[in-house]
Image (cartoon, rainbow, N blue to C red; front, side, top):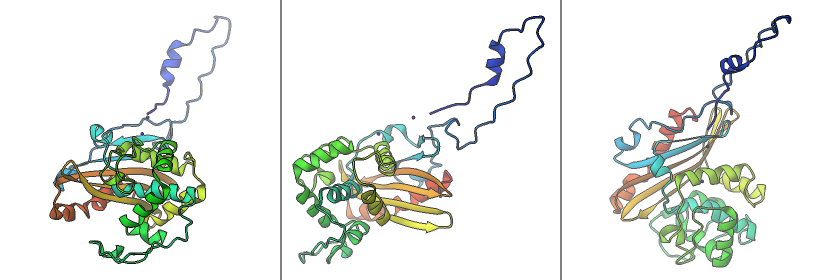
Length: 288
């Protein structure tokens, strides 16, 4: 899963040759307009200060954001931004897209609950695509993955250039505890490519999936995102990945948080912090 500058007129003036003595001196060139701060020609500073937001929440973490107006990608931690993690339930985005593209999902599907009780109450009942995405229903998308199958899944992850593209272990758990890894920077790039029509999927399927994932609509901004939460290397890891549209501008982002030991208490502590931290950082950079 990228930065730029405005040329200096002074350098051009210094390098120009003197006019012949008999000729009238050329008139001074009109000054070039300065690029606005959000112009593609503006300088991009890749570093972003998180203001202690992660530390104050007793978490390690990273925030990556891309300004679609100037292709400026900024991050609070370069090392973590390029470290691979299990995608957890953020994988529901490509899983849903692949399901729709292969016909495994039609958009009017009903996931029939088998009566098994789950710890998340919202999962205990029949689901459609919208409710399954919004409730992040694991068993629903395990069913989708099984119906896609290992061979097609592997081909599609290659076609989508998704993370390290590894489909190893159980077909219905490889994004939860297998070898699949994706970096926060790759998450942002995947969001960008989905919105820019750079994935081999139909526009209506992209719009359908992201339309389900609207988090908040206020004033001139709309916030979209998909969460993920699980365990990796004995620690709680959480995600929030998506984009914001504000006043005709677009920003793609990924937040990754890493908590303490994988216990129920730590799981419950980290769960609400993904959204709270992401909101604070989006507001800090003026995207919300």
